[in-house]
Image 1 (tube, rainbow over the protein chains, first blue to last red):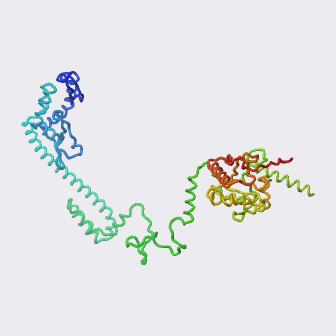
Image 2 (cartoon, each protein chain N blue to C red):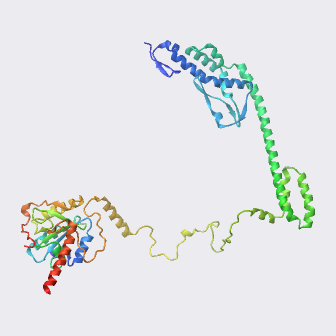
Image 3 (cartoon, each protein chain N blue to C red):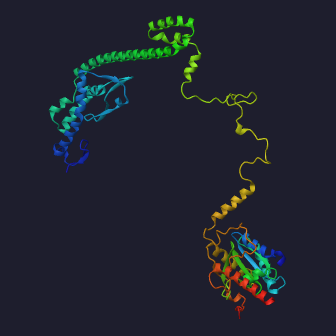
Length: 331
Length: 149
């Protein structure tokens, strides 16, 4: 038998020596692996003609596994904000090391020779790709500029409409004042003629300040509870001591925090009690309970008939009987 | 001898002693201070009281001053020693007819200490009746008076 060899494609050890490569299993594995790799390469090939440039997205960090070289290759080339799709893969496919590795792979695994060409990228192709990449970058920049301009125009429009709304609200207020009334339309017309940029500041200065407050209070109004401003005592902003740290006037004796010494000793006793066996006699006996004068402890009497707890009862009845007897004797 | 041990003179005091002794064997000697056997017993009790102070608390009760308990505990011979633990009465089988109390005096201090230890251990294990470790030869003999005869 031949020495043990590991086939990385099948991920198995075999003992057939050179014969393994021709086996059905190996060829099947080979076919599947190439099928997996082919779509990626095809997509990269398409990109040679028309390179696409896109805004950078974290997904562009993805790597592709090159079967022939046995290494991970970055699929897309990214620089700053932009990414060239399939740039990395193409770069790798065009490199001479990859060519050598592909040749070796084909020879060792006895794959179909025609397929080999598909997985290689000639240097000329790579140059073509670079040119199209440059073009792509330029067109991308143009597109971006256009988009920015569009957005700016939109913003201007929105601002305009807002100004109009404000003016329409102020018109009824400005009418009672005849002087303002005559000059105001003129200034507003002036405003209308000015488009975009400088519309903001002059309009704000023209309008009286009171309506601004009215406009701000539209909606549910809050209850005002008064200025919390006492001259002597400071507040949080001035850095005064917080109320919970101020000592009360009446300090009852000592200011000890926590349990007193007696309580502490009691706690110690309780801890000791916990350690005693729980099923000892009288574990649940309440030592501090107040009992009446006629209380009798639980005592198993000598001449009682029945259970221990009945002995007390029996004693009481006997005592009553004896009393009666003595009474009857007396009388 | 008897002046070294605490005395209880009324039912209330006895109740108090029973209720307040916690996690220790309560030894109540019922008898009279002048009685000779009582004196013997008291001697042994007082000499051992400090040694077993962590396990037991000993009190002397005069039978004439607490008639209720004298009847309730059925004390016909003195001295009689009754044992309690956490308010529960502990019975001991000495080999004598009456298990509810120890009648008479002990022969040696060691007998008494052994008895206390056995009672304590039994109580900790939840037993209400225990076997006495004292040699039956040393247990005083008496005849139990039958009731109503």
